[in-house]
Image 1 (cartoon, rainbow, N blue to C red):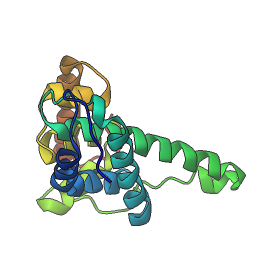
Image 2 (cartoon, rainbow, N blue to C red):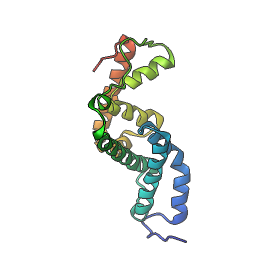
Image 3 (tube, helix red, strand yellow):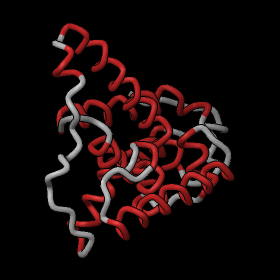
Length: 177
């Protein structure tokens, strides 16, 4: 079955090529923002289903990856909300359990383990802005589109995330905000 799209959108071959080019990046993003590999695969599929539904109105205004990651962010947020609703019947102590490392864990600011540990201590928002800038290599304007903020706010968030990360690495303290 051939799907025809108006000129301002993408044709079926362009949609297929875009999916092939960016599937791995979208899946990697979903893996970092969901709780399991299965949930990440489901989220990635939902991203591309939503994209295909809107492909006829898509206008390439830069990197299509930024557009796909915006959809991915929304899908992952929706999945997280659904998880929260599903956990309403769990006992409160399980829902409120702190997944952060305990104070007794050894923090070594040297090496990649220290960096990974420090990044894990950052807020979800700080981790996301670092990922979009350094892993996905998006511009501040693209980060702003993905996160639903201005490019200036994206820059401020990145600066804040880097400052928090530097402080964690410098001091080795786990509770820096």
